[in-house]
Image (cartoon, rainbow, N blue to C red):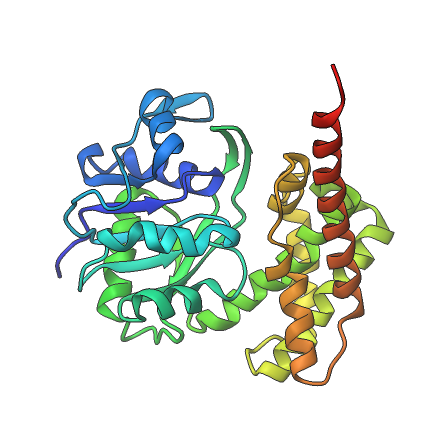
Length: 320
């Protein structure tokens, strides 16, 4: 079996930086490429990125810059930047390049497949990684686990691409799992994100509040239950007892951790709420269902985004 040697990544934010820094401990720096353009590329070349107080200067390739295709191409951007990231990364994809999307939600693989093709594209997700980003600096208290694979992964006959990635993650010291039913695994993570990310953003609260305050926890679980109802209609495998696992997972979270949606709001960035509650509401409508909790959370978060943008405009317009 040929091994993965070269790795290209687009999206050097919280998730991208912590995983690439870990990979760089085992993989030669000359085999790593960060895809970035313009001011961002210049900043990465000059200042690098900081993970847990340590500075990393990864090789930077601008979009369109000649480069041999990567063995592994990682997407770690926000959903709002995915289409641009796909355009930027085209030159790093060859006929044998394996692609993993570390994005939240259940739609990124479909978007990538439509643009780059589905061959060698695996499903993937990041589980229980606690990374808090400020500027180009990230604090990570736990690297978590990457789950990946084909839609279905029989234990006795993993695909060559899955075996290659598993070997690479083992060599890189990255905790990983290959679920037999990868689609169901994606939906379980989606259910967790729909509940936790949105509720934490609306109430501006850390993980401990979602775990310990009954009214907040109940709202989180109500949003998650709507995901289960949509999953039943879509045939993606979630069942009512998956709520019990979500409750148990709340106990495992870093109590001081913040969800990505909360971090985006606090930083004044537009959020990914449309791939969470927005996606639930659309799928519910498709099947003649309702998702009132998610509809409400989406409205609140969009309102918070609009208020933040309004405050920026009015503050910048005030005379000195």
